[in-house]
Image (cartoon, rainbow over all chains, first blue to last red; front, side, top):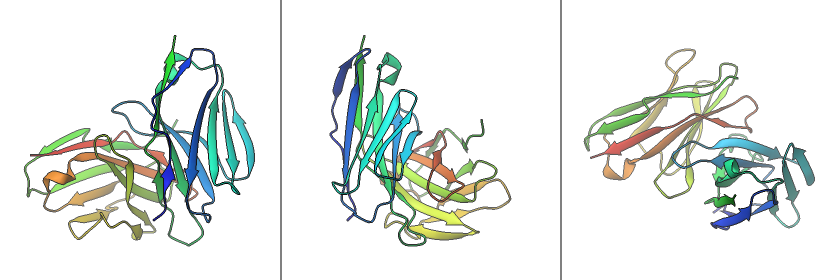
Length: 114
Length: 112
């Protein structure tokens, strides 16, 4: 059973601070890693994806991947109240043709405190 | 910016009835998916579809479920005989590279 684990939170961060969200995955064959943001009652919205070890930055967001530790994280700099949402980590194993589903974690609920 | 659309936004049905959920994927995407999310739970994969056939399906996607791409733009999920436990948000997603998936706004299915 391929698992994706996240701390469900809630994680409370003061406005302007850095929010750090973490995710671990069980399948060493996993190759693509995604962070989605989900507001209550809404659909997952893609924020970042990362395929290679190291850091990937996009605006205020940085995704970090460590395949040896099976760990992926998301940093949000200069946190804003509008960042308050549930952040979903998702993993896609493309090692077998057709095995292209995303496996999601339970999500971490993030609250930015003004 | 192109986006995935879904209709209806909310569907209420009686147990045992058939429902069809509709999706219009992003126009140049070739890979299509259905996921569901029961209230308070994880997003779960149901099925993926490429080149007019199912490429993978989960254990949830039993004989009561089917998918179809009836024309060049729509992608549908049919549930033949709904059960109470089918109540969930159903998300359609599409991808151009078999990896990066973009989700539609979802259809909330309520089975009474």
